[in-house]
Image 1 (tube, one colour):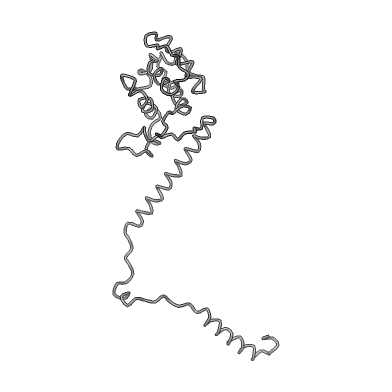
Image 2 (cartoon, helix red, strand yellow):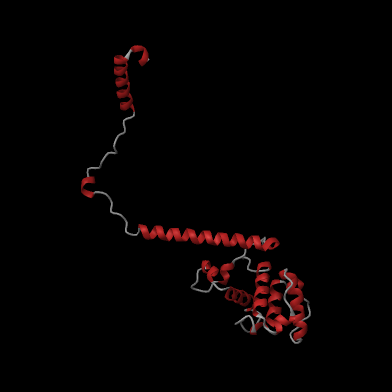
Length: 209
């Protein structure tokens, strides 16, 4: 329409339409309260940076924990549990459950074993070498986490037979057959730790109530 009406007229039409469009789309500044000049802008919270840093670190911890749990679930394969396991039972006051991921594996496994033996075994496990040599603690542990596979006859007196049962049942339940009688009787800490980790993954027995 501007081209048909000529340059001068087109300019007037354009100015008029632009003015009307500006009035239609005019943005209104927010109304100021009469106290604004007295109160002013709210001061910056000095803790904002600290709060942001805390939230960022919390998100990072959550991400790392989720990644770790994903890796554990993938590694466990068929050992994925149908019942929710409450690993917070292994935390010691005043620890937070999230701090469990920072513990050495040996400490975590000792806590797990002791949590199952505290009602049936006379003494706590102090280390994974000396405390497991006679096979008694491992035998009682298997009675808790794999009772259906253990023999009905008690084996409190015959150490060799007790260790043989632990090796046979333990390798079946853990799914990794590398536990041997010599590893138990000689207190081979690395083998015993690997066995306990495999057993923990297969039979944590920490189901929520």
